Image (cartoon, one colour):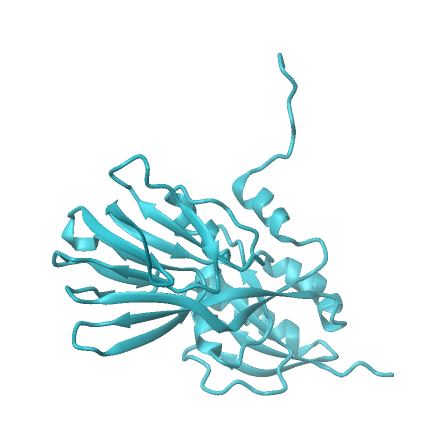
Length: 286
């Protein structure tokens, strides 16, 4: 039985020379490959329609490009394979050369797809309007330009948990646990867990620590007094002013992020490579 051609969507929206140069190189390369069809390309503008027959979305860039791709795909999520042209790249962990070398295996569907938690952030303003934003990494409520200590109340499923006093609060998915939350002292979660991490930003009391709870619960952030400049940030890319009387609700999305990895590439191999974990245990006295 003949294997049908692998149908690819290519997203290369970053206009920087590294991404555009890589796309020029890969475009010529893919044109010469048998058993591979590029059914859609987004280079200068976002993809308007997702071809229903697409098997795989190849994203050129870094993890930020993958976050953008997730929002762009919305309810038409497809497995995403990231080609890293950024910095750390916990999600986009293939180099251009590795992509070229492994294309025969990718064409033969020798990759695995894992499902990962996405979230919906509902920003309810004081006038009763609600903006719903779907994301993958995290929701952050930050002091921003206010440069003032904030008192942020956390409720889970309507039950008051605590009030964080500090520079802000992050609610992170497992995928986002290696992003802003990690730099704020939050734990690293395995990416396929169904949980959220709540991490305070520079808390002013020592008893405020990161909290991990189930993903099927409703997380609410409110403030009694909101200085000017406080900002809601979703995935480091979407920013909204947060005002007095506003509320943020974070819930699990019905959509899942689908991450494709080729053999030899895994979550822990990415952690070892990106965080410099040698995995070597030294005995005492050495």
